[in-house]
Picture 1 (tube, one colour):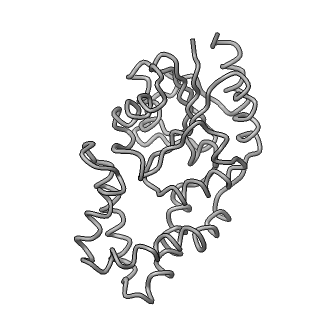
Picture 2: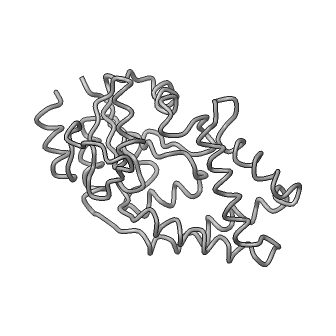
Length: 235
């Protein structure tokens, strides 16, 4: 019996073109930090490399620690002193990135409707700090409190598509894989939850399918189809 529904965020509850979002995100961050000696291209390259370090995290530290450990190699002690600038960026300039995301009222409506019958958690790839994740949740028309938990780079030791990301989350939720439904838009990062024994649903509105896999292998569609699937297939 399904007790827990896990939702991805970017491209799932928060509709977006990932390429446009990333471009605008970096543009505003580079503008914020340039006056403090951060050359834009080096900054962007270093953030991508730090992100790769998080994706490769083996669980020996949090994703936050993995990112800043790598990032500080590129900039030395300066970056630790300037960390509050990054935090300020997420509180202020990052909010403008909301303009580059879409909005689907059905996302919030669906989550709130399902909460009456299921436990609900947010399983977003933990590459962002808490402050940024809370903002992105609100951009989707929801509140952090709508979820039993949500994943950030501070509270996770793995990233998608590593199955250990899901194992860690399940342990936190005290939930077995067969009791969960994972809803996401990324064929590789979200549907891999099926290998652990979870049920999955591929939301196709902003689908990412880098390896061109046959999506017929997964229940799929928009929010209407998701609710129909839950009502007809899940006891």
